[in-house]
Image (cartoon, rainbow, N blue to C red; front, side):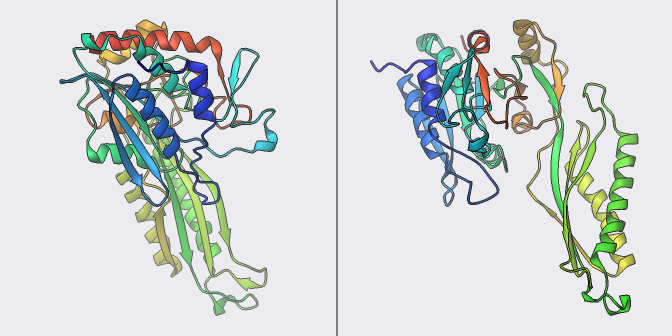
Length: 382
């Protein structure tokens, strides 16, 4: 009978398989080798393997591994991609697991390749002959950019499980709410001309000045209308991220583009928000006689909130000794909640270490998380 490598050996292997997800083609990498490795380990434990192609050109894949049969069960889910990194700012090789100061250092150690060895350690302790409901291990692609892996899973059909744990780094605390996010582009086309005579053109940057004012007004309206005390920043936020326009001081600006993000709380709807933005943009377009186009930079992620009566959240609170919390960062949880699966976000490691040089997973978080996973598997599957 084949034996799995231990937790440290598994994490060493996963970190040594770069799987960067980036909107910039020069940094973007396939996650295929990570998926194949996880599939191999799951097969060793007796799982049935289903590998899904998410993007054939970019070699992006999902894994759905199933142990046991029947209705219900528990999903243990995480993403296999990482953000890019600045290797020269690390004190060790980001693609080599380094153990020091009671920590495992490496790109993806906490966000979130480190979740999978903990899941496999918990499952390895289970007598599969005693399963009364299935265990599902899901591994997705491109969470750090488009969440296309989770979208594909949702489109093809998620398992009809009772509960799902999304193992993002939360410091072993259950997360039952997070904000949604949308990233939008506003592109304005005016008319270039000689700056000595404004009548020779139509300044796109001046129109953008008006657009920015409209967006700030809209932000103010949203913040008066929506608030949730569970969040450290209780209201929606709208951030003007970057702007590009024109090409020379003595030319009327013919084109200008703004990128912004909007993070919204549960109870708000992305489509309604986009409609509100669109109405304001078209008003400016008519006033300024310019062409204004709004483009979504990615499909966005809805806000997430577990049901108040969530059995899973109550179990996670009992096991961890911490009350459920809300966070500002987005996860794949809304895709599971939309499928009527009781969902919580909970994992080892801290989000404060994610996306940073010298990312690490503290060793003292490993055994407690494995213990929580074992008890959750026992509750839902045994």
